[in-house]
Amino acid sequence: MSARTTTDSVVPRRYSRRGFLGAAGASALAATSLGTPAAVGAGAVATAPLTASPEHFSRMFAGRAPFAEATPAVAEALRAIGRLNGPLDARDFENPDPTPLGLILDPGPNLDNPNFPAGITFLGQFIDHDVTFDRTSSLGVPTPPEGTRNFREPALNLDSVYGMGFGDSAFVLPNGKMRVERVDPTDRSSPEDLPRLADGTAIIADPRNDENMMIGGLHTAFLLFHNNARDLTRRSGHPDAPALFAEAQRLTRWHYQWIVLHEFLPLLVGQNLVDEILKRGRRFYTRSIEGSIPVEFQIGYRMGHSLVRPSYRANFTGNAGSPFIAFIFDNALTPPDTNDLRGGQRSRRRFIDWQTFFSFPRFESSMRNTKHIDRKLSTPLFQLPLSAIATGDLPEALPQRNLLRHLTWQLPSGQDIARAMRSPLLAPADLDELSGYELRFERSTPLWYYILAEAEIMHDGLQLGPIGGRIVAEVLIGLLQSDRSSFLSAPGWQPTLPAAYSGAGEFRMVDFLTLAGVDPASRSR
Image: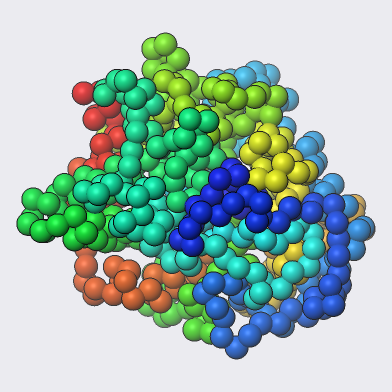
């Protein structure tokens, strides 16, 4: 969940648990082609094997017809819905002051969500990159998910950080620490950065985590958290580097998983739904598909794009002692050191001050919020730099790419899934802006669009609605429950590392960032 949780944006060099993956092996995303292979023809009913493979995608709602046929007319309508200046565009640049600072001070109709700190967007993106990576399917081309490889391990185990683990010299030092560098390698007091090649490419297990400065800063914080956990472990008497690494890795994973279950999910879906699933069990992410990533989750989780702000204050001192404030993406700019917040670059100003993104005691007034979960996305997401798209192909509008993915996976409509869940349905009048496309989208709505509308209408955009919330919560909780190495495998476990701000047995993102040493108090020393 993220500036972009989509896998359509990665840099050419890429690592995974299966080793280095050359860009030449990646399929181009054919945004304009619309095939109808015999395996999944237009209007076909999607089926699934009895038991899903963890290495492939799956379906939560098999046996249901797609929301629409994969025809050129449907694809063109989806592009129209997701285009710049279309119904999903928040039109930020029409504000009286459309500068990066102006859109922070006066967001206009693109409302801020008072319940979500801005950093939740990038934590959500990080979680997505930890569990799902689709490198081979094509936009708009019907593709069976059960035969499509997921190039991430479907578990909240940080393989996006650790790669192959201890012994993977690309990421791990012989002493069991993770490789970290600084934005100014000549200044030991400068902020930390991802390790990089000479051209700025990050040397990390999932290059998508260098897509923007915030996700890059968060990945850096995970590296530092591991290193500090390793130092604490060393004091407890673990004998050698492999043992130190393994224990620090376990502590990092479990504290991260705790945050997902106890902070991230309650914000996103509500504590009541989390408690219900933990107490009464999962209803739709069942044993037949647990341990895999359903395409309904892969698409529905992209609701996080609605949280993205058009601009952020990355830090307070990066511009020669002044704040570095910029649009998240500006496709008119070219590297190096672009005046936007894309990743893949190193300079003295490209670091994150986290008090803008999470609420630290004594720094509460510095924090900003996400946007609402609704049918308005920040305008920069409609004009992605082609360099931020792996294959450099069109469309450049992220909402268009999201909508075309519904044809790729032949997904049921939001209404059909709501019926399957026995959840309240949105009325056609709630989606009347879709009626003008004359394809009955107001009655058979693409799932991602329906989830945004459901959150907006049922919860004023402050959290996910019943079907979006249940899809996200059941999958993330199910991944923890089906993983024999997660913290849930140790009944009664509570966080054990020092928590600077939370009570005993608790741990939140502000504690995580503090232990990583990137909190505002540490930065000011």
